[in-house]
Length: 415
Image (cartoon, rainbow, N blue to C red; front, side, top):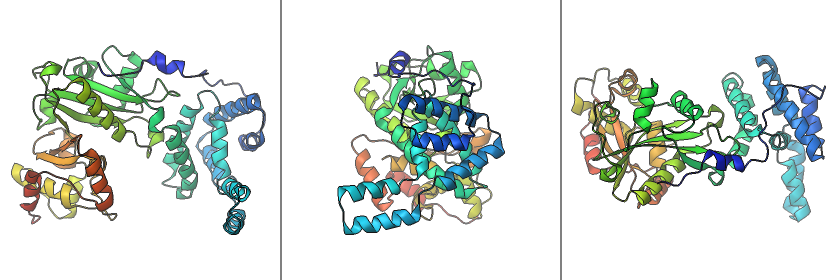
């Protein structure tokens, strides 16, 4: 069995997770309460005030939430002039005292506020939801990105890998967790409980998720795995109701066919790369017969790229679309020099290589719309992950098999 931590183990790490109440014991406006919290020195009073603030935030309508974020963004920003003066002072006299003063001044007051808010019971989940609200406002109010930057900075610290716990999700997991797997599945829709059972119950299927001790009932990200004999070339085969179930000990390939982030408020806080590597290492340890670790991944940007290149019709030529997909994955680059395709950026940055591309691999409506049905296997060679990731980050090199490179060379962009 793979190492996992039970829900009870997670709960035992928590000092207090009582839900937020609805009763407000402080009559001050939310802004005044925040300013008071920043100067509060008593721990009990601070936790009580933080709970009141987060309770009150939940009751705000959209306009008042906008006003609250404006307050955080403007009134709790850093003092640029004072920070500049302290930087000059520290530059001329780098004493510990001057460093401490400069360090305090260079941190916006809103960061300190969020740290104190996070002292309240259950506050971490509330702050994640607060950030979800902020993300919906950034398109219209991009100046609020200063506040978003600070929240992300804190969330990356609070949700670093050392705090995360990997658990296996199976058919016997609590119904509340299973419902969330259905709701959060972002790649291949789970339509019914029977669909979910087929992904969790058979001996050749696995699902793993990261949890945080402060949010033990909420998966952060989950990974669905198929244990198979050989590398698959279509999602229809992986998810087929008629497929033959095999014993885990008879499989030689672990297929990561779906990875889903669950918390919109944690966008930009990466978990998937660590989850894939942890699952691969544990499977390698517990099932030594597994020799290959591959994905079966969508290519979400392919059709947009083809339209941009002036290619309109490509569905009737399987070999032609495979060549175009290979060229897109290897050669289409964003302005920063990284692959244009977001899924490719993720897996290549995580140390995988482009292993193979397959036409008619996803004939669902979404699969045809985003990539004309093409999917790709990214392969994780555990002995080369670090080397591949390093080359990708330093040189933007796309590691690929010779067969994929040959496909890319034979592609033609003539419409």
